[in-house]
Length: 151
Image (cartoon, rainbow, N blue to C red; front, side, top):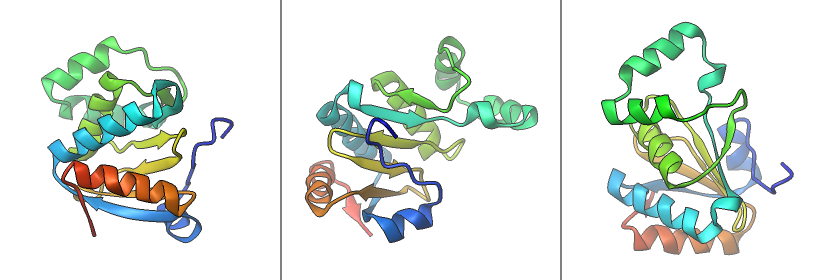
């Protein structure tokens, strides 16, 4: 909250309380979009949530078994604190976006220089929430440049 992130507890809140777009694209387009959003906001103004620590032991085991080998290696070598919010860098973005797009465990992504929240994934559709139309239009242009459309 003190970083000016748009924190939404239920997706319905976002639809009623914020400007939003629903993006639809392919995995390559999303990777490009998210990488450019990270670059545009900077690492010190970008975050993600990862709810692994909130899972039951059985859910954790199922998640780990479902991880592809390259994602599993990253997961094992990363230090995961007890919290759910993490500063975002390219490696973490690649990991979290990958598992979100593959529907293994959803993450949301928070950008605070140009405030928006990219919310999970529903059949490769991502709701994105903004405080104002100017910021929405900035990300709309970014999405178009990455071949992502709106539904």
